[in-house]
Image (tube, rainbow, N blue to C red; front, side, top):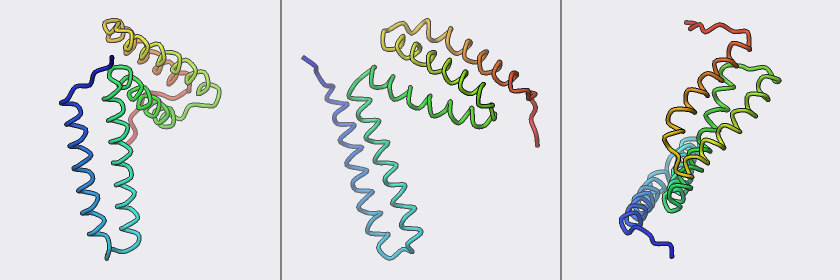
Amino acid sequence: MWSMNPNLIWLIAGTVAALTIGTAIRLIALRSAPADLARNRIGSLKVWWVLTLLWSTAALLGQPGAAVLLAIASLIGLREYLRLIGTTASIGRMTIGGLLVCGVVHYALIIGGVVSLTIILFPISLLLMLGAVRSMGGRLWTISA
């Protein structure tokens, strides 16, 4: 039978309660605010609710949930990195495919409990792979002011 840590339940309940109280206070304060400001503030509230839902779900699912949440965050970060370095379409497809495979293996090893391999092997290999992608893009490692 799957058992739940009572402290975790209290932590999630406290987070949801604090967010509920904060949401009520913010909605009351925004009644007389300009429409643009109210729309921005309500948008930030939605983000906090989504983050709370994702975090709570990952925490309740334990190590597999945390690994999936981190995998999603890694993919979003990878997309932003590739956008920043400006890879061409062919290098981007090749790189994304390789990094997706590496990411799946990485998080599968974490879920499987082989953490020692993931600590050493994957960060080094991924940095080398991203450096190779950068050099294949024809750009130098320069910092422009």
